[in-house]
Length: 398
Image 1 (cartoon, rainbow, N blue to C red):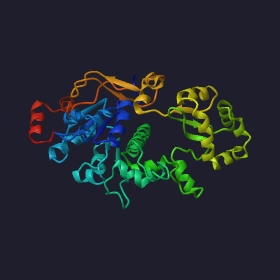
Image 2: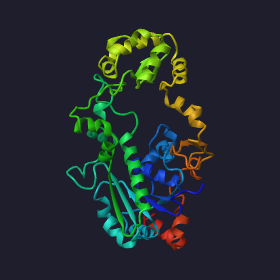
Image 3: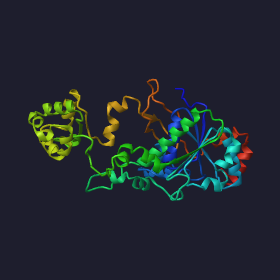
Image 4: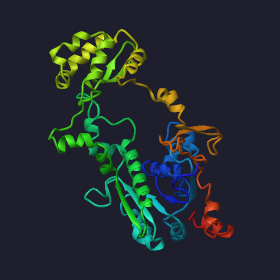
């Protein structure tokens, strides 16, 4: 499928998650993404993941998850020859993405000011924990640090368990998505001069917390952790059925009425404690206890089928394997299959973007690359020959 970013060349200097995730999205929309990795070990994510054998093979699960569709070249920016070679690549590129600490690229002589004379249409995106300026700019940042500093952990869990980390690297992922959006928007513009994009993971995460943040900024209410309760409505949250939990979100009056009918609890409709949205919110825990008395008669899946048939939003609470096995997910082309992946020695599955374009999911043709797989092709296209490549390798530049 032709992608909207066909013909766009992206130089991906990023490591681990936020930057690789950003460039992974761009690859799915047709961009040529050249992953530039340090010789020897490459992206740290190559050594991360739940399979020790793959980590030892420099093809860790964490790397495989977000690098399909990319090319891989090795390049040492700490050598003069490596810097010169990188600048040749920049002259051919549309986008440079990096997620080093602020100032690192400048010290290497390949920061934005060094590169913009080489390419008047360059989009340079720097992803960092806290942004390129401000008192925290030089602080090291990992996902969990940003989760804590953004307030995410303070509103996750309940009164007993908070502060609690979100169960996946949400701040890194949000930073990567924000960067991909900013890059795409910049590419859609006239591009009459080089563009510098400064993406702060901290600020990007705060931007996604609009409802929570605005409760404080506008209403003066300090956000707190409420566990599985949706504080905007009731009954809305996770409830215990006979065999496990399910989510119910009866946020509208008609949904509340239908819920009581299915549960056989007309008495709740006549109870003044539950007569209005506000009284149900005020008495949400007593209401939960009453609803769970009735839910104990059936399994969660049975209740979900009954509720859904009556237009009441509900759903089982699944494990990750169960979520991936749902026909709704597998049947929409969300899972990509790569057969006999080099460096892995077997087939792997990865997730795509969650988007469809004209009915088809954006996809990439090639699996995650072994380190330096594309050195010869990419560097020869710059005019280098075999002798040049041997010389650069001997110098430690590639």
